[in-house]
Amino acid sequence: MAEEKKLDRREFVKCSCAAGGGLLLATPMGALAADTPKENVKSRGYAAIDTSGKLVPWLFERRPVGDHDILIDIKYASICHSDIHQEKGHWGPQKYPQVPGHEIVGIVAAVGSKVTKFKVGDRAGVGCMVNSSLEKLDQVENQEQYTPGTVFTYGYPEKDSPTGISQGGYATNIVVRDHFAVHIPEHISFQEAAPLLCAGITTYSPLMKARLKKGMKVGVAGIGGLGHMAVKIAVSKGAEVYAFTTSASKVQDILGFGAKEVIVVDDLSKLAAYQGKLDYMISTIPYQYNVAAYVALVKPYGTFCQVGMPERFEVTLNALGLAASRVNFNASLIGGMKETQEVVDYCADHKVLPKIQIIRAEQINAAWESVVNKEARYRYVIDAATF
Ligand SMILES: NC(=O)c1ccc[n+]([C@@H]2O[C@H](COP(=O)([O-])OP(=O)(O)OC[C@H]3O[C@@H](n4cnc5c(N)ncnc54)[C@H](OP(=O)(O)O)[C@@H]3O)[C@@H](O)[C@H]2O)c1
Image (cartoon, rainbow, N blue to C red; front, side):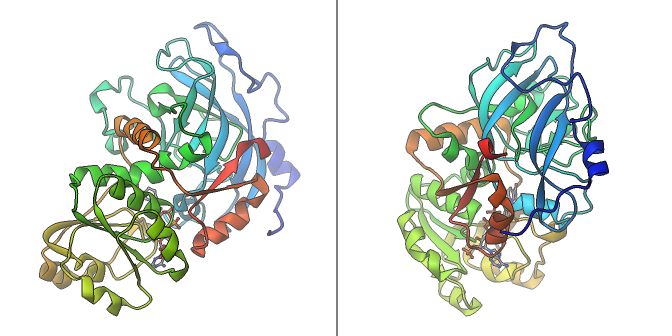
């Protein structure tokens, strides 16, 4: 395990809540009356402080629990490759310290005076969105991720946040507008529910739009956190799944997830036999790759969906390759809140569960390296009791 880099004392005091008085301790406190003084919430987590990909322990403050907010006492948070991309600056410069994490589950510890969706003690989950500048959200049902005003879970400018940006789920608690939290049913463990809040919804949403039918041939490229959920969800809907992996060591696992065939792409020539065979394909590959070679596996006028988000969000397309395959290429961003509740319920009801490894907070840095090296099997879930 790499040695943790600590914040220097001046930086620590500036950023942490330790020096300030009058902070709200994040212990269960029930419903907040409308006239309750709104005070910042004290939190403890792991933050990136630069682009090194090494996180350090950090004490910080969150925004107060507003009338429409809930405070969640986090039990588990899992690691998405997006956490790594963003903190390493792959998607653009960041403000630090920044706490990543957008696969979050826990127990509601307090509710604002106007919250009716949750009560103290409820099991709740939070994904990639936490707030909105819009007063009313009923018009944007299931489109929140594409709606101006939405605040994403970490690193996003947030007016009331003491750090100026939203801070994510690698922490002891989180404050979130009730609209952006979902209910976690009793018949799924917190640990297995966490990855559904991003890996689950990001693959479920485009797969549902593909109107999967029994026997439909579905390709999945990149079998990591997202990819293994894509395989499991498509299999559960009756699809015939072809999994394309660069890791021979994953073959038995992926067959166990229900894939009909696993193709080890150690050379692009391995793709030739599948050209024009698939009805639909989803790619989770997180770095630049030969997109046209994979797109060509789909039948003419079928759909290829890119959900992997490489550096600068860029993928390189070959226009002639796309033209030759006549495939519809698109991309998809997570999913709306209605669909997020739907995927959590669906996976709980049908036992479509992620394969996870539980880790302690001090293992996060090593886990990030494992994710980048394709060694995760298949989602690391951090026990928040260790922050
Ligand atoms: N669109 C969205 O809304 C959304 C939401 C969440 C995440 N994402 C993005 O989706 C991507 C995947 O996230 P994740 O958490 O599933 O990551 P992950 O767990 O690291 O899985 C990605 C998998 O892709 C394959 N892969 C990795 N590097 C590769 C390379 N250089 N060339 C070819 N294949 C490679 C590996 O699978 P094999 O070993 O099977 O080859 C790896 O396990 C990331 O870019 C992430 O930011 C997008």
